[in-house]
Image (cartoon, rainbow, N blue to C red; front, top):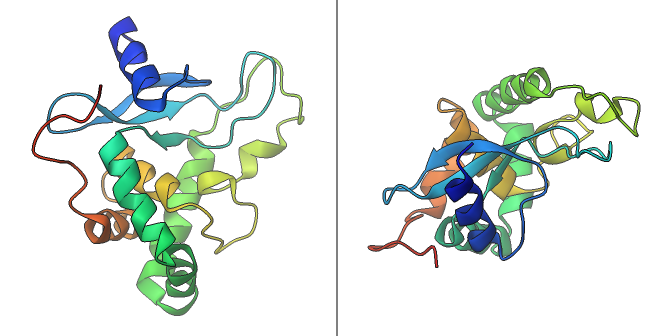
Length: 162
């Protein structure tokens, strides 16, 4: 991981990233758009969000979708649409396979079984940002790609990272 990437992510977030492992996807301007995170902090505290959206413009775009009732709407879609539900289930399985144990796990490894965004209940969609970041980090996640398309445009005409 490049120090300049970590510094860019810290500027995007307005704070130091807590479990930063690597940049998972970049915006059209070459800046981090989503990062991959470690499953546990050095302290052993679980960090169940494997991919995290960092680009300020993308965060705002997905936030508008959430503010408009997007979480409840996508949760209904997962429950009612066979294709959306299958995409969600496949991505949740992949999420679990990407999680990594650590030398110190204060939860005894329990968070390794959580789905996207730290969900414990199958079919739960609690954070569209986590699904969008997962789709950027793991191309081919159809439900996440649908969220990204609905939130578009994700990026402005010029770089938004300060």
